[in-house]
Image (cartoon, rainbow, N blue to C red; front, side, top):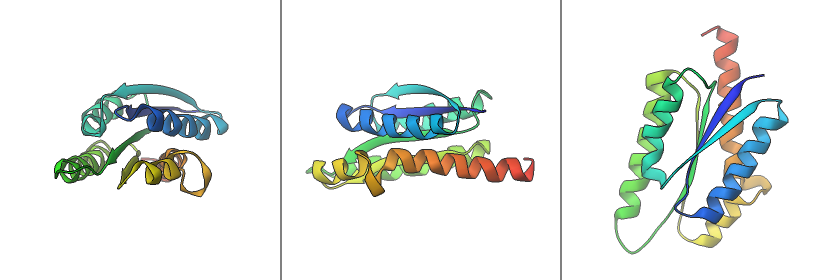
Amino acid sequence: MSRYAIVAGTFYRELADLLIASARETFEAGGHEVDVFEVPGAFELPLSAKHLAGSGRYAGVACLGAVIRGETTHYDYVCSEAARGIMDVGLETGVPIGFGVLTVEDMDQAMARAGGGKRDSGRHAAEAVLAVDAVVRQLGA
């Protein structure tokens, strides 16, 4: 049994709660322990993930949240920097990091990807962490 972290941007609380629930369920179904941390939004995920990954307490970190396109270019900056930052954390620390940040046009698209089913981004992020962690462990890294 391992311990994993979930860090979620809660700007869209309803979406965050759905993503957290499905990621938590995925980790716990494998008999793992999970700690959940919340930050204001997607832009804060990379720094939080870096501290969680660097703590040595977690076998992996699932980053969750949502960015919904608005009327300005703010969406583009937040999406690209959150994605780049989250990827950098995994590459810098060697700790498996899952990207479960919805980058969508509207709330309908977000709900379709947060509420379960085949597009469940919370579950997919947790599954990605578990899969990469299995590779890392297999290699003895």
